[in-house]
Amino acid sequence: MTPVDAAGPTGIALRTSTADDLRAIALLDGRAFHWTLPEEDLELFRRGSFDPANFLLAHDGDELVGATGAYDFTVRMPGGGALPAKGVTWVSVAATHRRRGILRALMRAQQERMLADGLAVSLLTASEAGIYGRFGYGPATVRHSVRIDRAGASFRTHVPDPGGVRYVETDELRALAPALHARWHAVTPGALDRTDGWWDRILADRPEHRDGDSQLYHLVHGDGYVTYRIASRDNGRICRITDMATAGRDAYVALWRVLLGLDLIGTVTAEVAPDDPLPHLLTDPRRIRTDGRHDGMWARILDVPAALSARTYGTELDVVLDVEDPFLGRGGRFRLRGGPDGATCEPVTDAPQVRLGTSALGSLLFGGHRASSLGRVALVEATDPAVLRRVDVAFTAEREPEFGTDF
Ligand SMILES: CC(C)(COP(=O)(O)OP(=O)(O)OC[C@H]1O[C@@H](n2cnc3c(N)ncnc32)[C@H](O)[C@@H]1OP(=O)(O)O)[C@@H](O)C(=O)NCCC(=O)NCCS
Image (tube, rainbow, N blue to C red; front, side, top):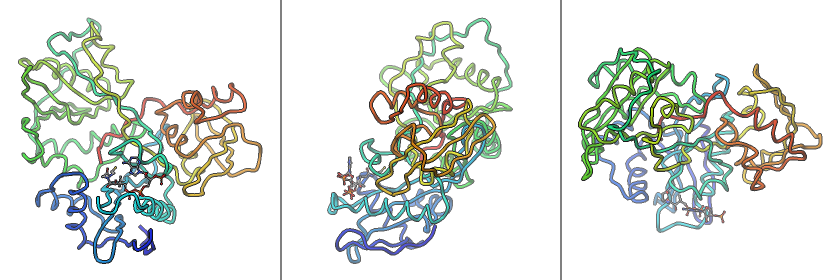
């Protein structure tokens, strides 16, 4: 990213990281998140995902007191297009220096750098949901934590049994999974690509990260894979799915057939999109319980025309948006003309039909939320309910967005 050297709040200087800062950043982050990053993890991170140019640091004299970093991703847009995007990560401010505006200064400088680098979108996953709306981020995906009563779950008679699933060890999955994941990434709005560094980190499966559960087990099919751990709890054994990507119907059904056939396992748990089709496969969909609903990935639109013209729309739409962006000053009026074949978006001075903030627009970007739902709490305002209805239909994506890689 474009280097930065800037003043933060009084007495705080901001600068771009160098490779030598990693240990200090890990210590700052460890204190903020109450964890210790073992040397082996730091090394995996250094080799695979750490680009010092993506990290911005805040100093009080010689002391490192704040940091924000980013990963480089390619995010899939509705309709199959893609955008380069930074995934913001490793955000922390020392407990001795909180609530003085250091995060605000870091966020501001980071977003300005992303803009200077020509990026249209920034992404993140939030430790606390109350932090990032003020910086223009909006929750952009929804994911459900589900728990399936395995023994009681049986497939409806119409459901095929495609077969073709086999167990592989981690080395073989490491060779096969990137291509399978890339096929899933190609068809899933919101999906993030994975570099070799990500695969090495995810599959390192170091005992320190197992929380007392089993090693990773892997099942592959020609069009998908699933990775899981077995956890032993007082109420029995649980199969915890940690990663799954399928690029075809057969792979999805075949993998779930094996998972729900795991004898001696009481429960299978997974994180799924709200439109996950598993309930339709079971004779008794109530065997699937939703334990939680999470915000998943957040999106911050930095460049409205570039972001909105990178996706397609479910129906023809011609609307003037008034976007408020007090944090970065990149709002304004934009005419969006889009449809199933593509879109254009350009600044205009015409009277707006829909008013919303960047945070709300981020929530609509991948089709994870409905404009009318945000409208019911005044986060989106339209001159005419029919316009809002059209925006709803147009922004709906081919399927619910999923990002796939926690970062
Ligand atoms: C979250 C954290 C980075 C905030 O840093 P900070 O320098 O104290 O934040 P700032 O002083 O710049 O605060 C900026 C704004 O965010 C708000 N804010 C900060 N932390 C918040 C939190 N945890 N929840 C809700 N709002 C928060 C502040 O009230 C302030 O609001 P305002 O200026 O709009 O009135 C810091 O508390 C931290 O390191 N926490 C632990 C690690 C963590 O959760 N990191 C985020 C990872 S996604």
